Image (cartoon, rainbow, N blue to C red):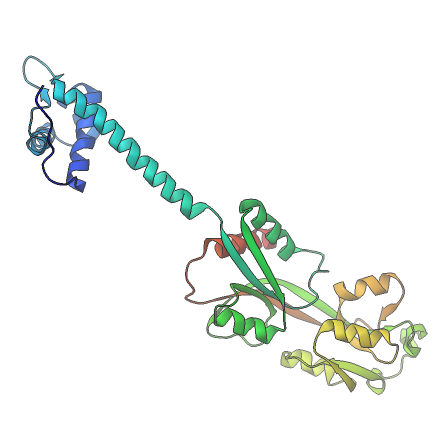
Length: 304
């Protein structure tokens, strides 16, 4: 047997020729391979001649006597199987790197959303952790404006905020509507009053938020007598529970105190408003498989 010496470097053309050769061998000749490869017998013959020229020896006998492999051809066939198998293994391993969920998810969330009955944020995080056990989740509970800034400057991958003023640099993915009502505590004089005899609520001390609101929501607060402020909804709840103030709270947050008869909603048909919450990401942000997976999970939970 002559010593095999490959001339030059392996190229894409060589790989194509070796793939054709593999099919020819497995089909037992040019005629059968013609159908499998969907190229003419002449093209196959040219490809085999080119491959033999590249390798420096004859791979097979073809002609009236039939098709048969030379000794070198047998070796090349087995080497080709090894080579193509290695290429496929390489492709699989690379794809595995792309599909393994590793890294961090830095998420900013507006305060007091954990009591939402839908639990879409929680369920999506649970699904993410199932899909990527090695993912590290970092949650920051901060005001909406800080969440927006964090997403824009890249400190946060995603934020959950109320839709107040859409920013050009952000994508918005609607999640849900949050309903808020006006409440007083059981220690407040209005707690035992009947709806039919309630005085104008604008006469009573009220706590209002010291954070941004839409014009529609601001109009609701303008009907109240503002004598206290709070930077978040938990602060509003603290002041309502003193028995000295009335104030708006999300219904899902107030439910725990309403159920314990420590709060009541005041004329809920009149004093209420709705807030749209969305997930936000930065436009033009670098592709991130962890973030993309979390967004897909959020989408699944919103559709369920």
